[in-house]
Length: 115
Length: 114
Image 1 (cartoon, chains in turn orange, blue):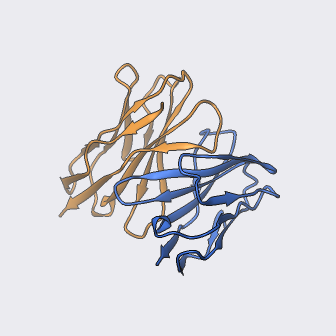
Image 2 (cartoon, helix red, strand yellow; image 1 turned 30 degrees about the horizontal axis):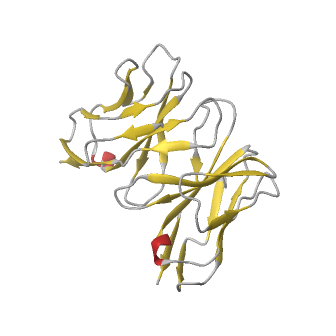
Image 3 (spheres, one colour; image 1 turned 45 degrees about the horizontal axis):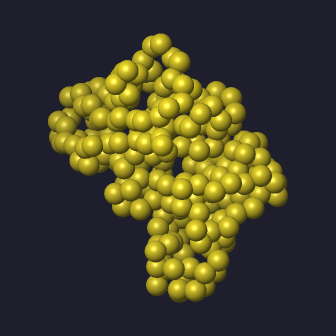
């Protein structure tokens, strides 16, 4: 069965430093998608970055990059130059197959950025 | 710029009461889904729909009903509320193109069942 695992319940990082949030996944599908969402304390879910299983390049979106290691089934989120506003819960998620509408989410990692 | 609209944002129910969480999207997305978020468990899929008239169960469907009579609306019905249904509920929509599966979320509905 498909599964997403985030092993870091909480992380601390100093402002302006880079941080990596871990995510491993398990699937037997050849076609899948991996997502990262941010949930600040206000509660809304904010899309950060997407990686398709057939994408050869690691995805990047501004300060966010996704370190995609297909053989290891990992999709770690790297945030460069952390900012205080990056303090939030971060969820890794995976799309099952090639259709839309259903994502499997990990348990989340709470990131705290220290000034 | 409405996107996905959920109502109500907060609700307190007594055990055994029923209620409907409303969800509407104005982006003409084919897919809609309901998730619940509980501490330490991430988001879990309750029900989803791939189009008007088509719904299916997710990981935690018990105690909930859905229907999708239009592309825009996807209400979630709690038939007889239980304390275990105390949670934050998110409605989401997604499209078939682009980043397939990217979810556009509503703001969430916090439900407390006493």
